[in-house]
Image (tube, rainbow, N blue to C red; front, side, top):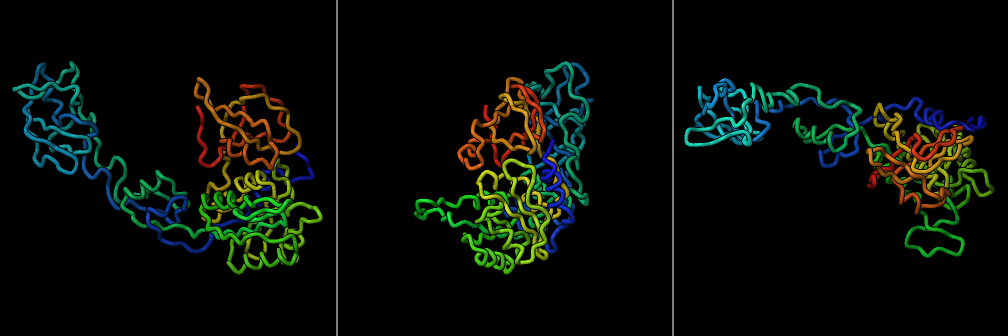
Length: 415
């Protein structure tokens, strides 16, 4: 059973997304800049695709009835290519050479594939005893979409296929929701930026780069405010800078726990944050702060690199998507897989284990957890393609047993 003193992951996510509506404001962006943005309004097709009936294959356009007689030969009277139609109607006993995407001449009602055709001085005939029936290999006008039809809808997150469709319906500019502004505040006397020479007890600050990448992939504009010392006044200065930057979400990195040097909660309290929760039944990522500071939403992520990464993936990305009007922002995106190694029984917190992904001989996803799962180990994260999810109270699973995984962004499934 889950630890009843801690909030479950599902309840925490529901509370993070509670009452979230699309931010006011939208902008028109060119197709080339719209990847991962979210449509603010429906897109209506400005054209019909295909605009006329076209051939789906290379071959010969003709009348099916003209091939009905055994040994029939048709006179080839012209050619139709993509962008350059034949331009005349076919009469009885006539055919036109045709190529993929080319307009079907008037009078033709089927396509004889070039590999099924025989050509001689008498014309073209069918090498098959069963010539093509009417309509074979023809893409009818409007098969894909028609002018005036709604093709893409508000709330759609724009990926490669959606951008292709938007281009095809002739929208060079897309109306998209305003990008949420996400301000990052890293805290810790032990942190120095990449390129600096760390002291004996210092480390390089890395969490911000992963969190910023997750936020930007979800559609946010990231404002990195830098590193702040373990000092309440310093942290308050960072929060004031975030509010001055009109951040919709403030993400803090580190200082979310209850140690003597974890000063984030007191700093937030002094700034007037209404705390929602700060501990969840999750591994890694137990100390997660969520609250509001006026209209600004606060997410305080743990300092351990993997914990910060997982929490950003599970909570920050859906929040960013919800603020852009994505109706699927909180949807379960986990997938079924089979375990590549035995899994121990889980206890009171949902566990997100770094795992590699491969496929077995039957094509099923196989998730094999890394041997080391310490939340400070970035090497194991970089070598993984998924998080293997173990719910609180999950029983043991043998190798080959069922499990659930959440793919990591850009993950490649190995052979």
